[in-house]
Length: 228
Ligand code: ADP
Image (cartoon, rainbow, N blue to C red; front, top):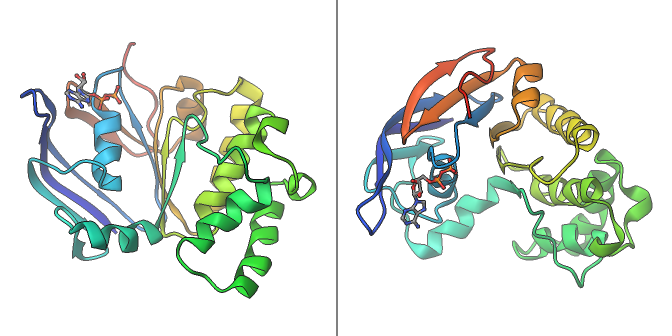
């Protein structure tokens, strides 16, 4: 479903953050992107989210080239892509329910559909009881579960996670990983950038390791195989 072909990314200061990146992701895969700080993980995620453009190479999603999209085409791309960040990025003045509903409102889903879908995803992440709470009334793990619910509420084919457990303790991280596994099991493809060695080693999934902007290994059922 996703192909990266000879991707290079140079920042404006001339720094090459990614060099000749090539990999494919099949529908339904769960792929970890690991590597030391500065390896290029965030840059890779930004290219997928179209927050940055590649300097050269091609990105193909569902047989459609997305390397260079017009600004007005980006919202359509995002419809098929859920995102989870390390710092949750919830709207502080909206309740849990409203945070999740908002993701549907901005793509103009029917109110009836919203009323049906939001409680369903909140139940999926175990937050039905928290629907009327505000983010500041929740633990970090609960906030991340809200952001998971928001990321999947529009049934994206691809879920991109940038250090989703970076602000969480080990037990809470485990809980988030269980939820991500559930989501993956239901058919959503997941790409997750992480530093969390234990999670990667436990998961026994595909691991792409970056170093200095290059892929140094790409292993099925891999582990966390570099030293920080
Ligand atoms: P990671 O997420 O693995 O820590 P990044 O993708 O953030 O790595 O960074 C890769 C490299 O690109 C680093 O050397 C970083 O300093 C550099 N870099 C990141 N963002 C920018 C930017 N906006 N301008 C210039 N260099 C950047």
